[in-house]
Amino acid sequence: MLGASFLGATKLQILTLLRRAPRTIHELAEALHLTDNAVRSHVVGLERDRLVQAEGRRPGARKPSVTYTLGPGADQLFAKPYAPVLGSLIDEVRIRHGAADLVNALRSIGVRLARERLGQVAGMRGKDRVEAAARLVNDLGGLAEVEERGDSYVISGYSCPLVAVVADHPEVCQLTQAFLEGVLDGATVRERCRRGEDVACRFEIDLEHSAAGPSDRRA
Image (cartoon, rainbow, N blue to C red):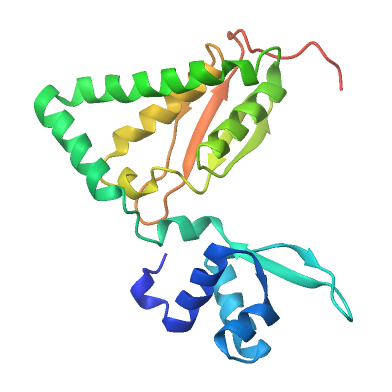
């Protein structure tokens, strides 16, 4: 993904406007004092880079207008004000206590967050519980989707709330893994996240031996 400095002023202005609220092509054009066609060409490029996505439609005088919002890739583009502090904190814990204690601390945070939310998944089993777990990840700032693969599931995320520090501190993914293990009540959760410039969360889930295992309901 291109960094902010390579996007150009107009594309950055479009992204800044969409951070505030979804807008149509015409609304963006009015705000930027450009023609609709000029803005549309920029939006097409931003869509291709997953920085912008269509969100819905707004009624218009002649026909509905598509509204646009930030896409999953935009989260990695903007500077995160907490990143230097959080990154330094993680480094300090590692220096003082070692890598193993750092991972244990991160997992403990994930477990605590899960315990605080168990009431929201009480009584759910199988796919229903996995989908509820993904929604809880979204509530914490993620953008997760569930894919069913036979008797197992994959939770994929394209907007990690810890994206600003994951590249340099991959151990923070342990926090999310422990969170999912807690919410899914003993499920086997394997972390398969992709790091680097194109960050993507990925957790493979097997409910076979968990208390949140397959539902007895028939399709």
